[in-house]
Length: 238
Image 1 (cartoon, helix red, strand yellow):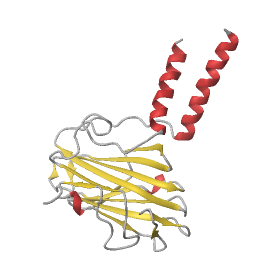
Image 2 (cartoon, rainbow, N blue to C red; image 1 turned 60 degrees about the vertical axis):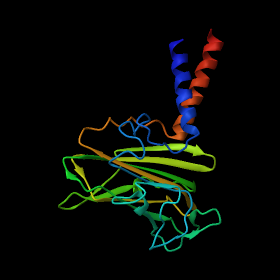
Image 3 (cartoon, rainbow, N blue to C red; image 1 turned 30 degrees about the horizontal axis):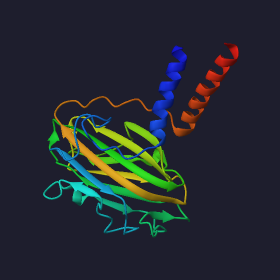
Image 4 (spheres, rainbow, N blue to C red; image 1 turned 135 degrees about the vertical axis):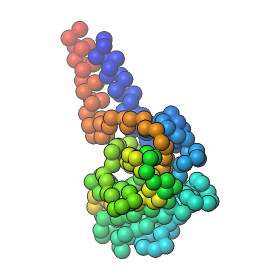
């Protein structure tokens, strides 16, 4: 009975991951337990449609931004295409059929410096070929040198319609930079960038610990299949 309940709980968790949508910081959902979007000391920017495929001036957020003005302002965040072969399709996505699309996302920060902890979260929606998860890098200046880091937490959140969504989170301990840069690229050609959101927050206290990664969609499907087979086996035996 306990194994059956455990399987049902796992199926419920994975079913939620299989129909993903961007997470809105609400002081509840991980990894946003410590702030809500729009709170003081936070920055937010989001894109659903792009107009500049390659190089400057890049793309300003079109869905929303906060703070909407002043410094820092989420409206000053910029998504720039780095691969010359990319172009904007009729849906507003950025796409290339001849090379892996690559991007750089620049987001302004408060620049408080030492004594603050900072969490940076990027949500990326793509269609076609998947994102190269190994390409996700955060770069910032810690007051003396540039620092580049891989995500502290990375989750393939599965499908939202035809789109696959990723959540990447970085924690910067003891420092709040004046700006951050996130670089990422496709695993191959024929990937289109569909949607993008970035949220940052800084505080003097420690952040809530990041959650453990859940299985990727393929592993999740195998886990669900295992539960089904287990239930079938129990019926035959019992």
